Structures are given as C-alpha cells and as structure tokens.
Length: 135
Ligand code: SF4
Image (cartoon, rainbow, N blue to C red; front, side, top):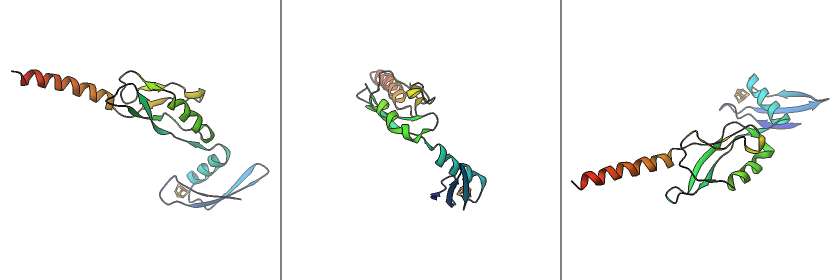
C-alpha cells in the first residue's frame, strides 16, 4: 500500500494505491485525473527541471533554463550534471535551445528569459543615448 497526495489541483486528495497482480487499485481520488497521476507516479514518475546554466558573458553569468517536457524522475540528476557542464557562448533568448535532446530523453533544455538579448539591446540603446547626449 502506498499513500500519495495528488498535486494535480489544489484540493490535494490523499490517495491510497494498492498493487495486486500488476493491477493498481486507487482510492481516495476525487477525479480521474488523480487516478492518472497516481498511476504515473507508480509506473513512470516524471518531473520537470528548472535551473540555470553558466554563460560566457560576465554581465549575465547564469541564464534560467527549463526542459521542454517532463523526464523520468531518476534521470533528473544526470540532466542536471549535463547542464552544469554546459556554457552558453551566444546571446540566446527565450525559447532558444541550449541542449537538444538532452541525454537522448527527447527533451530539450531551453532558455526561459531574454536577459541576454535584453542586455544587448539595452547596450545598443545606451550607445544611441550617448550619441544624442553628445549633441
Ligand atoms: S484527485 Fe482530482 S480532485 Fe483530487 S486533487 Fe487530484 S485532480 Fe484534484
């Protein structure tokens, strides 16, 4: 018997999961989505990863990233290790891929912020301002 709190909606149903001959008996769920969550947690638990990656740019030394889809829970640390070995060397923006098909799991590591792009555009803007200020 395994107990699990459903995290699919704020109601947070407490579910009990019993396995018999490979079949799951789920009780305590308020809806079908909870049962699907419980089954996924037992048979193939998956999680998303949100973290940061190092960059080569001193003005933005780290860049926020996430994976494009959930991966098996037991692969999280492998993916984190791969991300920690990576350095972004171009000014990527939101949605750009840092690592394609990380570890062959079918999930890309993508940028979630335009902070590198904004910094560059801000620099251009400041250059223009300086030119105007010189007039
Ligand atoms: S089982 Fe259904 S009602 Fe209960 S927390 Fe999960 S999603 Fe919400």
